[in-house]
Image (cartoon, rainbow, N blue to C red; front, side):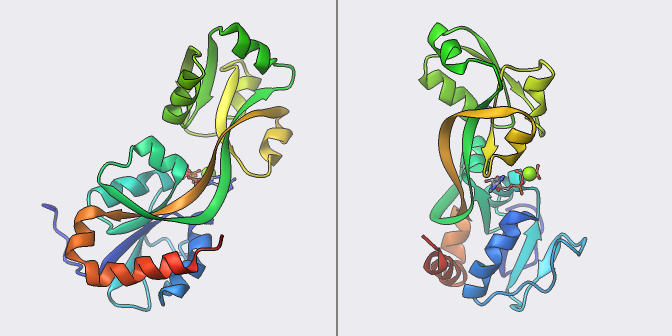
Length: 220
Ligand code: ATP
Ligand code: MG
């Protein structure tokens, strides 16, 4: 790494919200306790009970980038985010089985998805997950126009921006609230541990016990 970084311990990249909350028990299993909560603190670097372990708090979709460049030695990211990023330079040793949901196709009530698929016509698909969406429809032999959005995908079909959306679903509550129906599951999603490949070689004595503690604490 060419950029200055004087910290010699392990830097773990996490995002706020569900990933942070669901990672706490895994950290505890590795003997790591954050000094404060990112939900109440505005700090982006959070110390822990261990002088050689710190957390950096970033947007979920930035986690693979921090780990790829070695700014974080390891991180926790959803399979959705990892596929969109491409995973270059990342070692993915453990499926942590946290932040579970599914990637699905949803349509507004009244849109005949089966007929649209059979006709093989062109449909407009709005999603934050353009790579997953493109590969899904390509595998079905469908031509789609992809519209990249950064949030609130549910709105797109309601105002005529797209015919269908590809989005994460857990309970289905947000879809129901917007009169959308889940018509096809693309894949199950959970969060994985990702490790910088160079860090794994250079800091193996520090990283290996943490990786093993995380793996040992995974609930099936
Ligand atoms: P941001 O809110 O910063 O734009 P994001 O929406 O991707 O990013 P989160 O909502 O914290 O961030 O989601 C983080 C990860 O948790 C996602 O990448 C996904 O793997 C998973 N996830 C997203 N929504 C759900 C959900 N409803 N239930 C369970 N897991 C989810
Ligand atoms: Mg979110």
